[in-house]
Length: 281
Ligand SMILES: [Zn+2]
Image 1 (cartoon, rainbow, N blue to C red):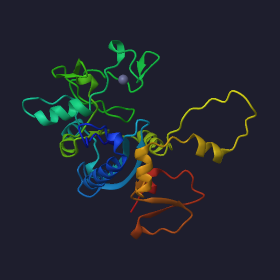
Image 2 (spheres, rainbow, N blue to C red):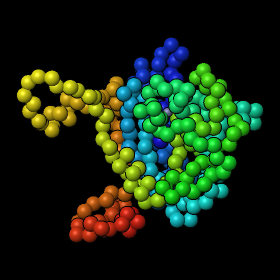
Image 3 (cartoon, helix red, strand yellow):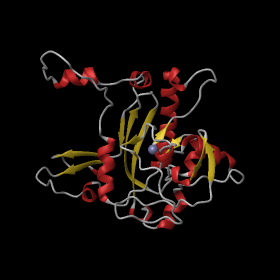
Image 4 (tube, protein in one colour):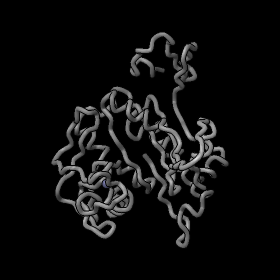
C-alpha cells in the first residue's frame, strides 16, 4: 500500500492543492508500478492488480497485489528478511531511512497508553498494534508471516517513545526512493490472497446518513449517487482522467483464450476452477 506524503508548500497542507496532489501521486504510482512489475523490485512479477482509494481527509492510497513467479515467492524467513523489515533503522547508520520510518511507518500511539486513538475499538486496536516482540521472522499458518521485531530500537514519535512493536512493515529500497508510506505485506496462502482481492474491490468510500422521518423509498442508483463521498483530490483525479484500477490480466467468462493480449478464460460451467489455474499467460 502506498500513500502520498509529499509537501508542496510550507504554508499549505497537501489537500489544499488537489491538482498537484493528484499529479504527483500519479507520477509516483506509475514509477512504483514500473519498479514492481517491470524491474522486479520484489522479484519477477507474473500478474498484478491495483486500485486507488481516497481517504476522507483527502489523501490517496494505492492497494497493489503482486503475484511473483514460483522461483521468487517468499517461502523462507531469510528471504522475507532480505526485503521486508518491521524495525526502526539506526539513526547513525541510516539517518534518512530512520527519519522516513519515523514520519510514515510508525502506527499509533494506541493501546493502553492511548485508549482514545481513532484506531481503537472496544479497548483494542483494529490494526492489532502493538505487535509482539519477536527475535526472528516466522512463517505463519494464516498466510501472513510474523516479522522480526527486536527489543533494541526506539524512537521519539508524536510526543512519545515508540518501539519496534509499532512499526508498519516496509521495504527500505522503496521508502528511500519514494519517501512515502509504503506498507509491504507478504501473503503465502490462497486464503490471504482471497482476502486481499476482496479488499481491493471493496468499492468507494461512503458517508453515513440517518433517516428520521418519512417513507423510505429504496433506490439503489439514487442511494449510490447520494451517499458516495468524494473529496477534492479524488474529484481532481477523476477530472484528469486517471484510472482507479489497474491489472495485468482480465478474467472473462466464456470467451476464447488469447494468451497474447493477457486475456484469460474462465470456463462458464467450471465454477470450482482454482485461482492458480486461472492466472496463466
Ligand atoms: Zn492502533
